[in-house]
Picture (cartoon, rainbow, N blue to C red):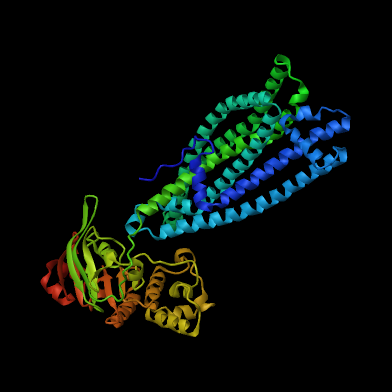
Length: 598
């Protein structure tokens, strides 16, 4: 289960502070210290207005109006400086100049922190995604993964910015409040109580904002998921006119997303527009009570009033920023939940490695998904550099068995052994680096033919020669040589610019280019015409003995010359032997051959 998320209802929750501390570390305290310096420089700079004005007007009550902040006047006496208009103005300018320098340092410092945090978060999420097991991946939503890795991770960094802007304003308010208390504590307490009572209204708005932010994240997942599917299945959707129906799904979610965003914007507008009138009303009421009821002099409240008025913008920004942070905090929840799922679905990590893939022994293999038994008590041996074929009806378990052999599907029961080691107790990344895998669905990247085949190898005379050799093996050399830019021709998204057969041959060429010890071909010739299939069959025959091959095929002509054929039915091996032996001894296999008129 995903771990419990921070409680959003606790203002400036330490859970969130701790969360961001894990991202940027001790730098957070340097940032807060800079804010503290800026807050007090600003406060002291403003305080200088009072003695300056009183000196300018000839009023000698400066010490009384400053309250406990009268130490500022003592500073002038200690420094031997007479409190003149010119001296006061110079000190005030210096204070604000220092504040400006500190503000610049803080801004640059936080920009660097933000960049480091974004880099750390996004690279960490990519690495966690990389570590997810294949079985774990099949249980995740593609749209959700894309949304979190691209959109929500960036939004978390935005929320961090908002969160620390909150601290920036909190420090400013604390500085002003501390000075206001020093001048007139009764007035300060009454204003503070009034502001606290008004906050219940804004807490209610924050709760509603949180609900809408979660809805926006969920709808965003749906939009990303539908968009991915519409891109992947564009040809089919367009050809069948189903795109109109699918587009309606997208439009409905987009409209709903805009509706929720409008609700959020309206809540933010209420917070922004209501805060200032409420705070001014509180200050006005408290001022009237102090003067009319307690008969305090307005002069004694002047500095405190100045501080509260100065803090007004910070108070408004705090509530607005907090409301904005609540909206963004749903992204923190989404990223943390996804991160936890990545962790729970990661592959086990072992240090021991497979040095060479020799004989592969599959012992007592059992795979079951829910109540569905996919493979049951599979026991086979694949000798080194031999070629074996897996045949059977759809759903017989052929692809799942291939997935187990190449280190994708962890057995629920049983072992896969080579070099005397269970491959699932070794470093699977090292094992899979020795494997080539051609899937039924061609894997094509939106890049050049050369990069697709060589997987972005540096173009040198040797790599070019190797490239042309494998292109000849899959009957693609003539085609590529006729192109204007030859091997640099791009293939488009998912190979949209070439035919299905050409895509499959490029996929096969990529695995032939790779120096593998085990080649798995899952319906590798399914998209090929008879002539090209014949060329691929010849290539397969030529590759016999160079490395171990496991071939899954419905078109039995492809596997006539393999060393061993295994017939699977309902997840069990019901026959094995050479093509001819199995044709003689297995009525089921004989019927399959006859149906294909071989």
